[in-house]
Image (cartoon, rainbow, N blue to C red; front, side, top):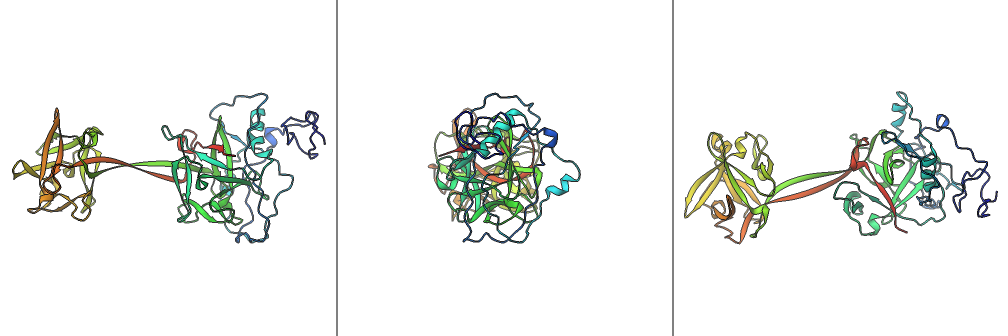
Length: 416
């Protein structure tokens, strides 16, 4: 048919013009009660053969809405997708994983809410004119809005990094030809030979890149949560889990160049029964220096929430010349005979080592301001101070779906 607005040719079953997005007068929206369910199991797997034609990228494009209907925040809008006019042929291969969504379907069937605003959102994925569009999967954590999912091609693992439009950050989103409302994510660095997949390792939360195949673990559903925020779920796991960016915080100790840094400012707080808590200005008095103890002391220290723990209560024993050795009440009680020491091999590290007459175990408190001081050693001199440093580690994994988890809010930013 011809579009009455722009006169562009369209297939007879189109509801919207593929060129201008105009809604055809005789198109009737499918009632919500008749909407298809979100996930279906796909045929499963052998690797896609290279001689078959590659799938055409089928990815979001912004279409200006004529009217936006507000949807209450607790409700999620799911795409109601029509099949592409020329779907790429699915390879004739045997099954691999079966969809775990079928287990949940026996309990309850999720019916998509298809309103006018939802139809316009769905059109983002329906009206596609180019096959080479790429997207960045942007994060919604507070303070992390400029970070996106990035692929490490060597390990096949996903990381989070500052957006720079490197090919490892660019993704092609391709609709599956045999499973409705399902998409494949392909990284531009590795190409269509590999796809984003939930790894079948019996824990069901690890996500990585695997050889492209007819695999429910490689098929994803994209759900609008609010505005330009989307939740991404997997056909194999169903709607119970969603792709999540999880940021873990680690507070460790290092020997760093001396300076007026908050991480190098320490203070003593007396502990009941003797000894001191060593707290740091960077984290406040609620975090104390902790000699990690898991039945045995290991050669690592960190900053954790202060409590009545012997491995956080430090004894400062004079070692001559305004120097002190630092051990803990727990070391003393268990007769472990260990003291805080600089690692001789990696001088930026500290550890608990057998007590002895070693310069790396002799610490000096250099006053800085108020009750705060720096901690240096005889071994490294005053040019290196003990510093509390923060490390962040990012995980991309499948976690329990939750509308209030900002780590599950993704923005699909088109880059071309």
